[in-house]
Image (cartoon, rainbow, N blue to C red; front, top):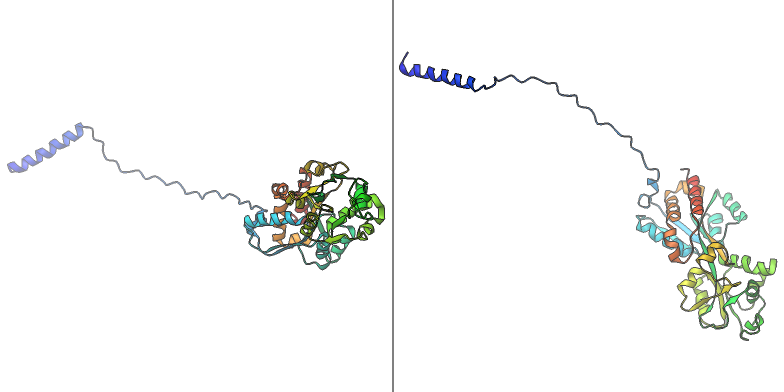
Length: 341
């Protein structure tokens, strides 16, 4: 063996001894381990929200409402809110009076919702049934009917029910009602006969004071101007200090700078007296639909549900007064039963 070869062998041996002395671990073959079985992620049951189909943005199709001029501004406000929340269909609100609105709903069958400032009558429920509609009603607010004179009137502050019936029947001059009042002709303004406001005034004032002749008395009163448009009545009363009219409290509030609301039997119309029933001319506000419509037209069911759940946020601003929590729950129960939820 050559010197170079021996030197090379020596270096290899020495290097082996050094590595052994340093305790370098022997290289072990990796132990094969069995990969854990891949488990499929647990599938959670998906619970569908049964109310999702009634969200404003989820419904399509048109909605037609008509009826009370008193309920009109409230339904208009709820329409605006409903559209802001995502509804993109066509929602129409016609102001034609409670009686005409219920007739259009129960006789012609042309609308999905009737707005009314009086309770629906048994004969009207029967008419609805005759065209296959099972009426469902929702009490959405309370209105105080305001008896108003011009802000320029400086002699009337309060009237009794009996005096108001006299004003709207046989009295010709203000002095015919109270001798200290001016000997000037009474200029009478009244909602038309298709209006729920007229019906309610007849019931609460005319028939209360005059009995069964009350309606005939106001219809036969000389010179009384009737209109289904509350704005026409407002303008008429504004035009003379000797004029008098009546309509929903909201219309008075809109024109409070030019009109004066009278107390009736010493009770001022306001939220407290209307809700308590102290004020003699306070009345309920309704929207009516039918079980069949609410089940067949999700867009109508959606709007009614939205209406009864959100009306409290708007009603005071519109000029009416909210229903109680118990009545709100009754509305929700009626809706749930009607749609079959």
